[in-house]
Image 1 (cartoon, rainbow, N blue to C red):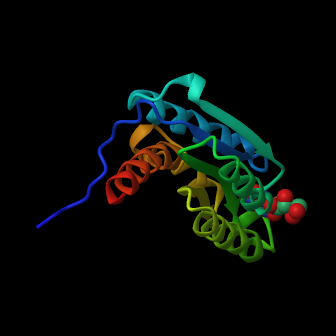
Image 2 (cartoon, helix red, strand yellow; image 1 turned 90 degrees about the horizontal axis):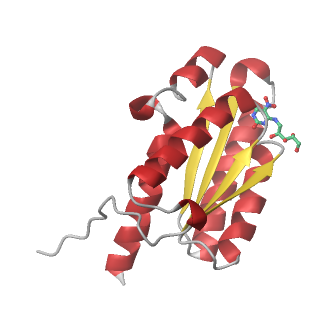
Length: 154
Ligand code: INI
């Protein structure tokens, strides 16, 4: 039996981060968590580029553009869509998820969905907490794992 499994070693990898400014009191914490995960697992700061967009709705286009440059092994998207504060939650959250997935499939570059979608601000704060409860941290680890496993698959 042959098993393909990515290890958490991000040394030599390059990453593009797309971050939405909307709800930036949350997205800033996701960025901190993500950078922590990447650096803890061997990625160099010089190999990380960050692009800011207004809201989660705009994330897919910027992520696709970043992925298309060929400069990155993976792109990581970070955002926060909170139902409590918007009536068009479903459109914004749905479009962000669908757009990120499409961009990843079209470019062949792993694009990680680190956009949290919650009912309340309290839930958003919980998901942007310390390492183990920070979705940005998880997104950073997922990016490394995906790059590794895709490499193994050849
Ligand atoms: N964008 C978010 O990232 N999170 C939200 O919770 C949100 N709400 O509440 O509306 C939000 N809206 C802005 C949207 O992403 C676009 O930036 C805007 O519609 C312009 O296209």
